[in-house]
Length: 127
Image (cartoon, rainbow, N blue to C red; front, side, top):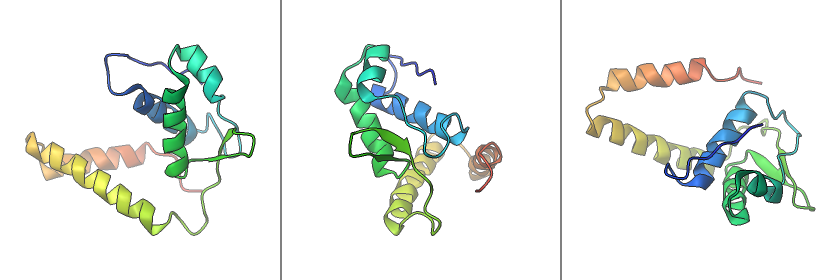
């Protein structure tokens, strides 16, 4: 996986988070595979270790990775029962914010739905 960061862009930890999420969703990191160590990725990107740690912690909190006792981040298998209610509550909040931002700048509801469907069409198939 090649991660790149743009210092003048959005917060670096979010750039890392989004790129790792993309790699997981495209099976570049299949279930059970380890992510690069936080220290190694920090060195490779010339960023602070805590920046990478913050991205990995966000991945853990959102249920994408699990941490081993030795501190390695592994891509976790999705829960067969689906995500917990707390996950859906947070997801709903994030989607509501994005929808409100789009509407505030003049994007129509139809365009929001068209783009959302396009994103889903490009997402990996259900397991």
